[in-house]
Length: 273
Image (cartoon, rainbow, N blue to C red; front, side, top):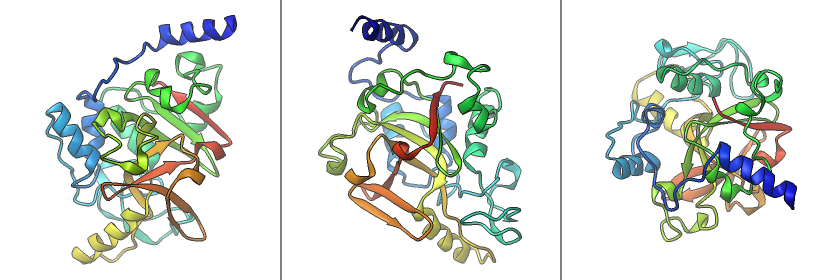
């Protein structure tokens, strides 16, 4: 018991508790991140309403995912993939966007933060980073992580490949209640994160975009979207996918809130840049 109380006291010194009932506050990091969401995104709309910000989506369907995409000057141009993955074929054309690290790195550098290290280094190199950056909160229940995380913290995880996301608060921070999103009544205090990652909605949206603009290219399997973390997939009411990947999601006012399955990660870290 004494050891547990000592750890809790240390956590409270490092990461003081957020005020009870606090709503999201305007942040340059969020202003930057949210411009890459699609028009009408409910989190973006609530952010503007709560904070008085006037962030507008840069692209109608949001920014698409593009494997290896890191350079802002190529965004939304038709570009050839240079590597074959589950969803991309080397030499075939797609609409260029950021990949996960490209997107988070863009947010960081737009706000004067250092460029990201490799995701493997961020997870593994304790000698380089230590507890200053690796938040020691893996044993904290998911509905209490909000008390130790700050907007702009990263979650870096590994399934078959590594992925990085940025913490943006909780559904409660954006004013959601059980009446608003009944499927999520038990998860209003769980962390939500923004990322450029897999999302079947983007595939359909970019099929429309390609047709509307007369482009000769393939659609993408994802884009900038919001995930929730800490929910076991067997408690998630909806799923969609194919032989390559299954997405588990909640229907949140018509928005597909995807679950990041942290329980099947082979490694992960909460990281403070």
